[in-house]
Amino acid sequence: MPARIPTALCFDVEDLVAPESDDAVHWMAEMLAQHGLTGSFMIVGEKARLWERRGRRDVVEALKKHHLAFHSTWHSVHPTTSEICLDRDFRDGIEALWDWDREGFADAQRILGRPLIGWARTGQSWSPSVMGLMGRMGRGYAYSLVRLPGHDVCWYANCLGFHGTGVGGFDATFVDDQRFEEKLAQTRSDIDAFQQADRRGAQWLCFFMCHPTRVIHSEFWDAVNFARGANPPRADWKPAARHDPALIPTMQRNFGRLCEFLRGDERLEIVGWGDLIRRYDGQRPSATHAELLEIARRVADERQVLFTDHFTAGEILLLFCRAAVAPAERYPRPTVYGPLTTPPTGGGSDLDAGDVKNAAHAVLAASDSGYLPASVTVGGRSLGLGTYFVALAEALLGQERVSGPADAPYPVAAEAVARDVARALPQWIIHPENMDLTLLLEQTRLQCWTLKPAWPRDEL
Ligand SMILES: [Zn+2]
Image (tube, rainbow, N blue to C red; front, side, top):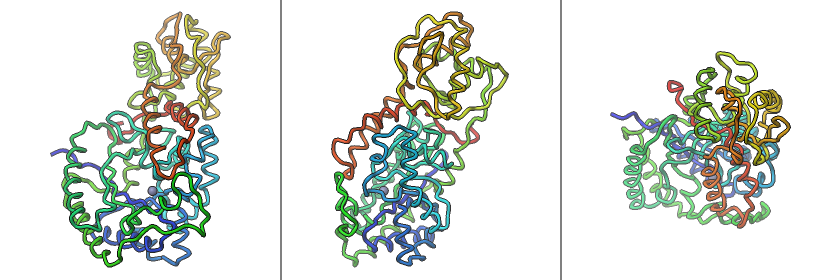
């Protein structure tokens, strides 16, 4: 029998307008617990503040039976996560996001009485900096837009990110018995398809249970207020259209049916998201010199910036540098972010291997800032980081004259990652049309120097 799929039951809790949505979260959290199921609730900071103001201890107590994560402070109120980062580099984006969300994060933790285990993407609002921020805080990131072929759980920006692949879409079905039954049947086969797909390393099934607010309303709370960049003052926020409260027993009955299905499905191992973060947040602590030489041979063959199953391109580069300046049997895994600006092109032919190795001192010194430099000076010539990466691999292999590709600013996988981001962000109804994503996408590619798959501890 195949291993059960590690599955997190995810809820996005975010309606800042209708108090009735508080009741929906409450009965869902209670019903889940009654069925012996652990949910993962992604909670908007201002929503927690509203519970405190409205005296909803009952909601908070019901949620404490589950895993709790942050869903930004304001969700769809502008500026969104992406909007804050649009005209900032990765580093400034982290600071700007934290300026905007620090209080909401602290308030939510205080009110909920639990540490928030990570940040779950709000709508289609994402930036590399939001993952950098969570990684810096030792937290995870859910519904990440970053993945690799066969790997839905990846390290990126030094943060453990869980791609949003999975099953779900129950929001509008609980209110209607027939739609619910159809959705449940569809989900059974979606899980089969998920199980059959080729996956390696750390795995999770994102079982998106619902937005509690959208279960009791026939439209989204934010679409009626904040669509396409609209940002009305709070006094003008209007509630979404609500279903007849007489239908709540129907919703509850169907939600209970879903809970029973989840308890009984042998294919699923239902866990809290925090359990998965702990299961997968290990990384190889070190690399041997022999292992580095093997990687160097691959780099010299492929002549491109690459990462391996266990080391990011940035980690490999710094490990190469250590091996060049102070060879040893084994080196600790370094931690570093990608460069903040695009590496220059050209200049990588016919280099002296001694000069290339010598330049490793400067790369190590520059990376003490926490960021890789975009360029490296070798024998008076300025080389792009990826050009240097390949030349250094050749130098480590003992060649006397070495070279690197003229144009290799990041790992090749960066283009696919940036394409996914470019597709996702404009799709969100809350985002204004024609957002200029140029800088955000380039920062996304540059942080692919920090990309690699994640693994369960026993596969490290
Ligand atoms: Zn949301």
